[in-house]
Length: 626
Image (tube, rainbow, N blue to C red; front, side):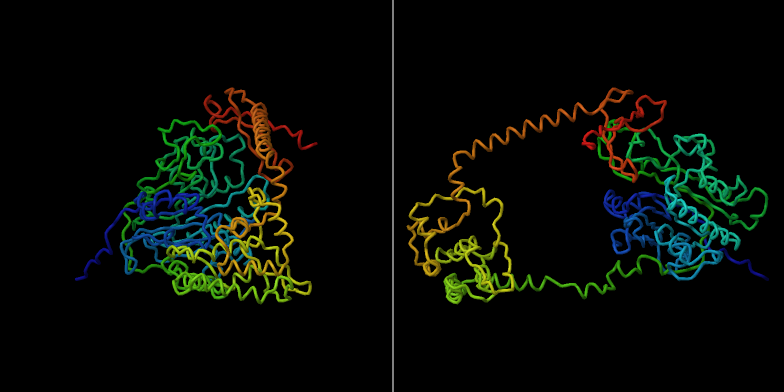
């Protein structure tokens, strides 16, 4: 008796979410962790676009989460100087990463869709394209493909191209042309294809807030509609199929104009599917994947930054800080999806990336000069001189010997003969963590301060070619020229100025030995500081206060005049009689860098009087022609 084969597994629902995060690092920070972000969707497969991560920036906190397997694609080029401007990531919620029968865990995965990123081998159906073309298409990190046995899932971030940027228009058209070849080849093999992500295309006028009569004539919109079943294609726009008459169903809003406040956006985030249903009798009339397995498809508007309860008006910039992406996620719920044969996590999983777990080091790390050992040695030397065994007296003796070897009256030709280097060789530094020193031990730091404040006393000989080594105290700061210098008597100045180099040497040595008298002001550390502008500062001492007050008053009056001038120059919009906001043209062209004024309110429908009235005025350019 022939036994009926047992069913492979139970049937489970599957939920797929697509979300342009506009920076994965920002969204992880917003939700506190990657796990918190993923868990909010309660989905089995989560596809992120515009992660804005380079491959060297991938860290475990951004791509590794408990209970998920992740597959990422990063930007591999710096087109127009931009780095990490795209990127996609697919997260699959699984109970086991090995010997799993879950549909969410893919049986295979690849970065890009041409075959040259992972295997350096052209995919079938792409023979007509040159290798350089295919490599360029996949170099921007815009696609991750995961094979879930029942279907092949494409996580896409479509290129954006301005209407006057011919280079990007050509790139975008070639991107979708090659992509369609890959889809056709898979469908020809009998596979089911799911396409999710931000395609940067609003297919019809119903999907755009301000569509003009020629809106649907755009070449990319025509291409998008040509793939749909309604136009003879093989794909189904799942959202529009489930909600054919819903208007103002947008997924993206301009953040620079505050358009989200009035739901003035476009629907450019899509979920497409093609292929037969999973039933054995799928050829029967009325059977399709959409009708048999798609339970729901909708927009997760709760992820919008602007909530209905927010009452603060935009006013040229958000009155309140709004966290989140400028896109809203879309999701699709599937049913009657049975499990698949046991399989393991594909090699592309982020768990195997060496930069995540630090398994592999780059060659640069072996060639980079390390500062740690030098700093540790320096700290040890400094701390050793702070101990009781190394007293300031010993430090003074070492500095005296150094001064004896370096005569001031006859400068040595040795390049190391400078005050700075003498003190550096003595290494007389006080450790910040050391205990309080006695009065005898406090002489060394003061001595160092006095002598280092006179860096110009010693000049290398003319024959010296090597420049003296610079130190932190070898150059006077700007503040030292404005500090109040202590008044010295005429006799003291003359004695200081006319002192011979030999006397200076003996005085310095005697001070280092601690033989100076405490009551002698001429030998006190405070009176040994030299100020090059001491004479001029004493002469202008009485006028400093009045000059500073006068300057302050003049600057204050000038600033008030500028503020009033700026206030009078800001025009008022005609629609609301409110002050406009200034903008600057950032697009390259003849008007690049020019300022203009627009209505300060958020962009919205023309029929809404609370929205932007459309006022525009160029700023005065008289100053540019002077």
